[in-house]
Length: 550
Image (cartoon, rainbow, N blue to C red; front, side, top):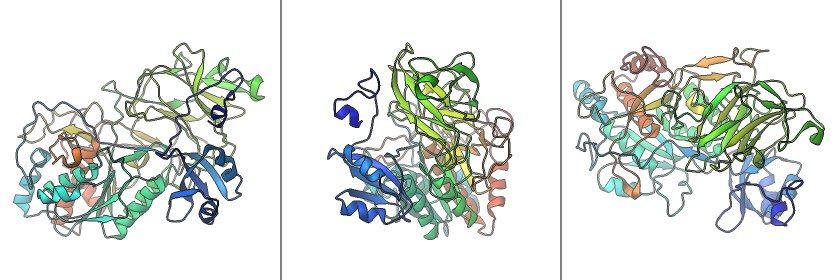
C-alpha cells in the first residue's frame, strides 16, 4: 500500500495490487495491533496516534494511523503483530422473498415471530405455565440503535445494555440485536433480557461474552463470526497474532461456569444445496509453482502448489456481495505455526496475480492467510513454502461460492466442544405456519453445514499427536439442531422483516432453552441438551446429519 501511494512498483513489473485496506472517514488506516505490554497504548497516544479501542487486558488495540506510521509502530519491541482491521459478519439475511408469509399476532407486541407457533412454544407456555421467568438471557449482535422504538410498540420490555453500542455506520441499519431480542421476548416473555455488542473487535466480543455472564446471564446467544476464527482449535491459551480462538475460549469459559451458549451456525451455504463456499482436505502436492506465482528460484525456497483434485486452482464462482474476504487456515496450533502457506488470487486466465496473502509462519504465528474477493479474478491458489509439512487445509469464501467444494462450512465458536455450547441451523417458518414444524422441513440453502473436524485442544496440544491430517483429530457433529427463520419482527430502524438466517434461528433456540430451564431450574446443562436433542423433529437424513444436526 505504501509503495503504491508513492508511485513505486509493488514488485518486479507490478505497479498495483488489490490490498482493500480499511480506511476511516477521516482518511486514516484502521489497523489492529497485538502487544505484549499494555504500556504500548500510552506510547502510541503520546506519539499522537489515535487509539480507538483496547481489549480488557490491553493486549489488543485498534488504532487509526497513516500508512507511513506502520513501520514506526512495528519498531516498538512490545508490538507483536500489526494487521488490517479484523472484520466480522452477522448471520442475518435480508431481501429474501416472503410473498407467502402469513403475518399474525402469536405472542406479544406489534409483530410476533411465526416460530412461536411452528415450534409450539405458545402451547408449552400454556400447558406448563412457564414464560422464562427467572431466566436471564444475553444477546450479542451488531446493535440496538432503535431499542426504545421497539419498546414503545411493546415488542420489547426492559433490556439491560452492557458497554458501548456498536459503531454502526450512521446510514446502515443497526438493529439486528433488537430483532433477536424481539424473537426471544415473543417466546419467553418473562425472561430478563441483556445486550452487548459483538463488534468493535474480536477481543471486545470475547470480553462482552464474559461480561454478560458476570451480569448473571444463564443463556447467551450471538449471531456474529469473525473471519479469523479458527476451524481447528477448541480455544486459545493466550493472545496470538489474530486471536482466532479468543471467542471460542470465552464460550468455553462461560459454559464451564454453568451458562448455556447458542451460536448461529452461519449463512455460508452447504454442500447439499450446491451453495458451499468451503473446501477442506489434506494438502496434495501439485508440483512446483510457475509464473506468475513466486517460484523457488525467486525466493530461494522450494514452493509447491496445492492440487484441489486434478486442478491446481479453485474458482470463485459467486463472490460474496458484502465483500467478505477469502480465508485460508491449516492444521497448526494458534501462535505456533511453523509451516508457511500462502494464498493467491489470480485473474481468470491465471496469468496475473491480483491478490495475495504471504504472511510468514516460522514458529510463533497463527496459521491464517486471507485475500479479497473479486469476480473478475476468480482463481484461488494455495502454495506451500520451504520445508513446510503437509497439513489439513480449510479454504472459506465466507458467503461466496467455490467450484470445487466440500462440506464443513460451520466453524469457529459455532463449533465448540461441551454439552452447553450449541450451533444452530435455520429452516423457514414459512410453509408449516400456521401449523407446527414436521419431518418434511429442510434447512435453508444458505445455512452452513458441518461436520467440524478439530485437531487441537484449547491449550494448543494436539488431540491426536503426530496426526493432524484428515484421519486425525476429533470430528464434531455440528450444527447441533435447527430452528426457525423467516419470521416477523418489528423492523425498527429499517431492519428487514421477515428476519431470515441462522441469526433468527439461534434466537429461537435460546428462547426455547429458557422455557425448558424456567420449568425446572435444577436441570443440568447435560440434561437440557438431552431434552432439546432427543425431542427434536428428525428432518433431512435419518438421525443426526451435517445440515440440521439432531
